[in-house]
Length: 68
Image (spheres, rainbow, N blue to C red):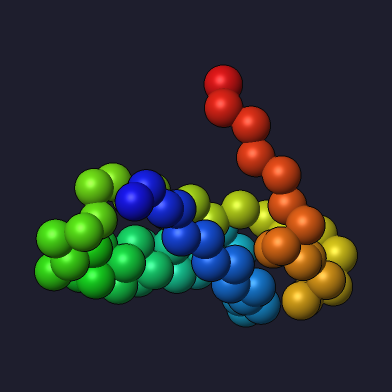
């Protein structure tokens, strides 16, 4: 069975771009460690983006994805 797992993590990072980059690296290390130990995972990506709006306002079940 094919499946895709999604996770949304809203963060409030004190500081600027350097602090955000450090958080992104920490998040990537954590996810990479999980993925490398799981033989069911074929591919993973991480990206930290600027958040707009209130934390928790996004409903992951209503999101739509398109293949480019």
